[in-house]
Amino acid sequence: MTSTVLSRHCAVCDRETSLWCSRCQAVWYCSQEHNTQAWPEHRLQCRSVATVPNSIPSRPLSTSIFLPMDEDHPRMITVNLRPPAVLVPFLCSNLTAKEAPNSIVLQRALNEDLLRFPLHLFYDSELHVNRAVQRITTGLAEKPFLGNVVVLKYNGTRRADYMDPTTHDLPTLSAYFLYCQ
Image (cartoon, rainbow, N blue to C red; front, side, top):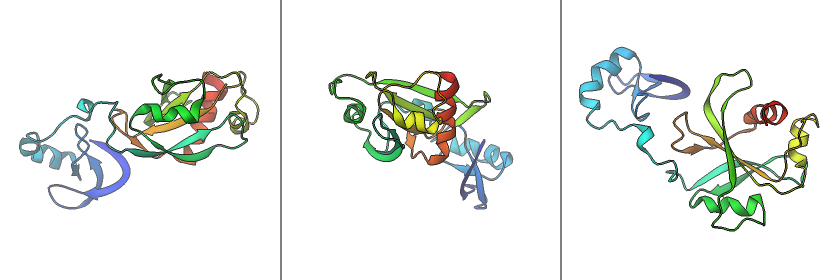
């Protein structure tokens, strides 16, 4: 079982809980005992989140953090996740709709802890310094990040779907641009 800040009701006793089946992440339990008690019945419909294809997210639209190379501040944008090529207009004009943008998945925080919700960065390789990246790192990034950046947030470590990132993800991005690129 895994913990999160979300609150749902236990499938056995209907008590409010923040723990869920770590395999399917669809059924909630208030304790390990209730998870074990319900397993003989639940296992018949339990499907691993890892079996969901990464390329077909269940949500067609997602909010993302956009770090434009020619603006001083990051901003939130809504992107259509189907097909992935719709990110191309935000990234650069020299990519065609058939080309996949460059990407990296940030799975660890600066202190080497595993991120519960990894960040998926899409970027281009245009030769322009990204002013928004320079702003969030207060100009201290050793290597200025080039081109536009679009950041999506995975809905868990299994990376099966995206959720909406928030401004609370900017420190993790800043640390990446400062130390890890």
